[in-house]
Length: 118
Image (cartoon, rainbow, N blue to C red; front, side, top):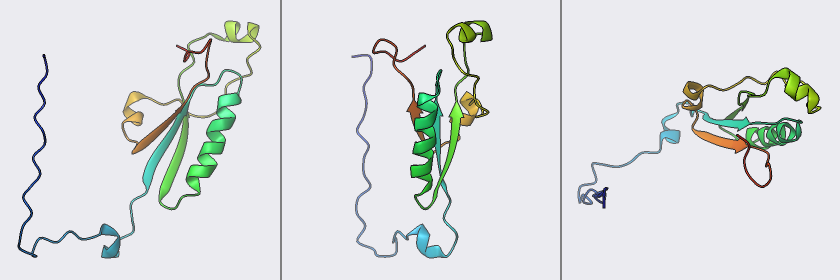
């Protein structure tokens, strides 16, 4: 096979109790928020509504910071107008660099004939 993966070797347990793992929450420092991004594409607004509801739910969890993003539209305004698509919302468009900043990502995409749209 072209790839050969070696198993990760776990460190041997130490009999010494000097290496104790401490819980970062017990240090008194405020915990860092977990960044969750909700990234979606929505032509007619249905998936945008779902993204907003997901944001509400995820934001209700303590220590979770949620931001909603959309992906760039590839159709021009003329085509969107002929399709009866409403104007896009003011939700920011995400870049690959911004995507890498998230701790977790939830994607929302409609289906087109059972497939994700391009």
